[in-house]
Image (cartoon, rainbow over all chains, first blue to last red; front, side):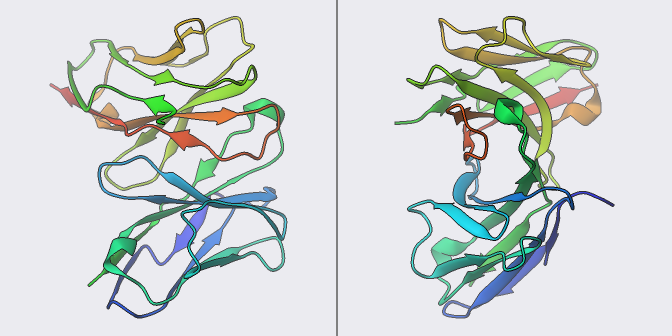
Amino acid sequence: DTGVSQNPRHKITKRGQNVTFRCDPISEHNRLYWYRQTLGQGPEFLTYFQNEAQLEKSRLLSDRFSAERPKGSFSTLEIQRTEQGDSAMYLCASSSPGGGQETQYFGPGTRLLVL
Amino acid sequence: AQKITQTQPGMFVQEKEAVTLDCTYDTSDQSYGLFWYKQPSSGEMIFLIYQGSYDEQNATEGRYSLNFQKARKSANLVISASQLGDSAMYFCAMREGQNSGYALNFGKGTSLLVTP
């Protein structure tokens, strides 16, 4: 399978715990995005990497959220001191430069439930 | 302000019929891209079709076509010959600006149910 992969697919945690999600992009893609999707809504942008550089962060990405892409390949998204409002689907997407038609390809997502 | 508006929370269509899913957008940029994604219950977002703001012809990909009306700022998705497997959430999204690598703004989606 050469698509975007995400692990874990599901995560249940207690409020106040830290969680970390991993995203492995399509191998030749140097751009990687994180989105959050809550029930009944479309995905909302969180952050964007080009290679290892984090180039853009949404105001949705509070201080409790941190994302890394240390070697320009896989990426991790960590949420510290989780809150019930963090319950959502976390989607990762990747792309390669292609001008305006550049298409983001998404992984299956990680569903987080904070109790 | 919402940049992408999908006014149909839910739609029904009979198998083999065509269906149109509405999308209007708001931008002051001259250069932008419009995308449609399908999200089955499994959760993965599947890319369907792309339309660039400078494209003169409506985009088509198999059974999917995009009815692009630039002056009205609408980019409706048309699915022809609906199949049961088309039942899913459908999201319209926009990327603004000339450069790639920008975030996508998504609408709230339309739930499509295809009935036998």
